[in-house]
Image (cartoon, one colour):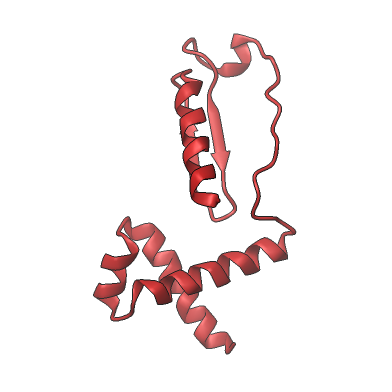
Length: 111
């Protein structure tokens, strides 16, 4: 794959993520199919995962007991999930049920 072609698609993937648009809408605006964008997203993210030694699987996480002082607020624990692509999911409302639902949703999509 030519380096300039990969760079071209890396820019599109980055711009698509920042746009908040669906793949279909972004692709239509830029004159290519959502399938083509999807192929390049998988290629680019796959290369990143290999580069940093990541797998595309979920890993077990143990939640350690903590004190309210560590939480930084009186509403309960805060949770921050940072993904390699820069996406961050964060909550500080203390409702870990929401986080559990999100994890279930992501697992469903990852299957």
